Amino acid sequence: MPLIAAGQPTDFVSLHTAVKYVAGAYIVVFAIILIYLGIMAWRLANNQRELAELHKLVEERDAEVPEREQEPAL
Amino acid sequence: MSGATEVETASAGASADTPRPPGTLATAAAILRKDLTVELRTFETVPAMAIFTVATFVIFHFGLQRDTLSGQLAAGVLAVSLLFAAILGTNRLFVAEREQGGFDGFLLAPVDRSAMFLAKAAALFLYMAVLELVAVPAFALFAGPPRLGSALGGLVLFLALADIAFAVIGTLVSALAVHTRARDLIGPIIGLPLQIPALICFALGTGHLFTLHGSQTPPGEWLLILGLYDVVNALLAYAVFDFLLEE
Amino acid sequence: MSKHARHLRGLTIATLVFFLAGLALTFFYAPDDVNQGFAQKIFYIHVPLAIVSLCGYVLGGVFGVIHLRTRERIWDLRSYTAIHMSLIFSVGGLLSGAIWAKVAWGHWWVWSEPTLVSYLIVVLLFCTYQPLRFSIEDPERQSMYASVFSVVAGAFVPLNFLIVRLSEAFVHPRVLNLEGGTLPGSMALAFYVMVIAVALLFATLMKFEMLAKETRGQTRRLRRKLLGDDAVAPVGRSAAPL
Image 1 (tube, helix red, strand yellow):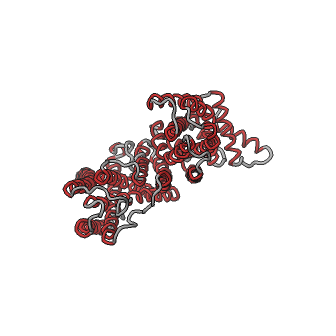
Image 2 (image 1 turned 90 degrees about the vertical axis):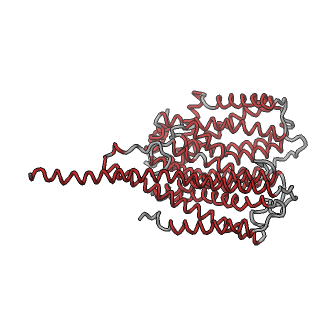
Image 3 (image 1 turned 60 degrees about the horizontal axis):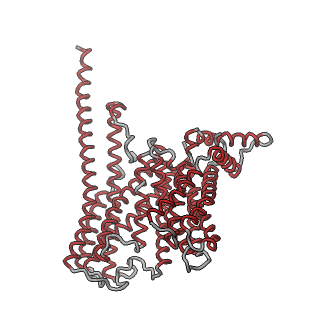
């Protein structure tokens, strides 16, 4: 891009306005990445909840099995 | 009449003396003959494309509110109308194969898969060429670009090269889209961005030809770039097309 | 431990270090531009985002080629993740580019800038990647077709840039100057550090996403094993390879 020391000098935007735009650009970029991370974190939480559910199921099943094994012996 | 039956009869004919399967070009020719026969019997695709293009010219007239077009505006209207007609043809390209089991028959036949690409691209190219026999006179009538007569030679060159791009990319995109659920939508949205470079070359090159005081010779650099774009896309499509026909 | 988790911590730390260093160099070390003043600071985030996302698209195409050759699902997953991350970076690149155009030229969009225009075309093309995947139900076919798309589209990236740039060069002749070609040393340092930082961010997020996808797949398999096939919702409505 012919922006750096090339072409005719454009009108200098005042520092005050420039700061707003620069901050805006950086905030937009970081917001997009944060939104992405937020969505991924939400999915991670879902996955963890599901894993915990499965874990509980396995434990319940393990607890049931010995009882059933004992029945014929009694 | 499906692609499979043609291919089978072709291979049956060959097996009488030698049990060799038909070559790529023979297979492609058989499929192309089948497509053209179907088109000649049903008149399904090309007339629709022609009506669509003429309607687009009329719509541009009302949208732009100009009685005559010249220069870049004329080139843009022509290029965009042809591109949309090509998209229309692209959507129909593999419909018969999908609906009547032509793909399965083709895959069962012991022939080179690239033949399908060659045949379909050739069919689309011919459709576009026939369409332009109607579209260019209609364009001359409705838009009245200056110096169309003297620019005709250059215009034909550009049309031929642009048609190759439309045909090659259109065939590839059509094969990509034909097995998807929303194929009428997926085809155009993938196809349009891929066609933009061809459109740029065509529009800028012919815009030069339609300018009142421009030079008579077609701008060589645009012909060259458009040709290069054709070649690269044709090689690319030829390389990846086999993967689209697998089951 | 999954192989995607390897180096993830190191990569994350490196990304943070480079980002902080890049931002510090941008705002405290690199001088203000002669023509644009402070507004030119957008350059240090916009251009790296654009470069990295374009490389990501091409990378997705390279992974697609490997997938077509080896038929291993992992390469399809890599191709998908690379394109997915590039799309996210592209949104950032386009928005920051628009803000920069506004402050530098007074318009939110400038058609006379070939780099910006060809970038938009590329983004438009890759926006169709997810709908394409989404609309193919058979996972095998989905991965094959997606790879074919990634190869064609990956090759389209340099071609398109060349043609759009040439069109501008022929129509409005001017000296072509490549980004960074005329950067003075202190600006170049900040710029390259930011490029590395954004590239590292890309690598980190790509690894992270692949790890997440893999873990998700493992949970599904576990659920199927424990509760039977009926307990797992069909993947059908998903565009992502699992």
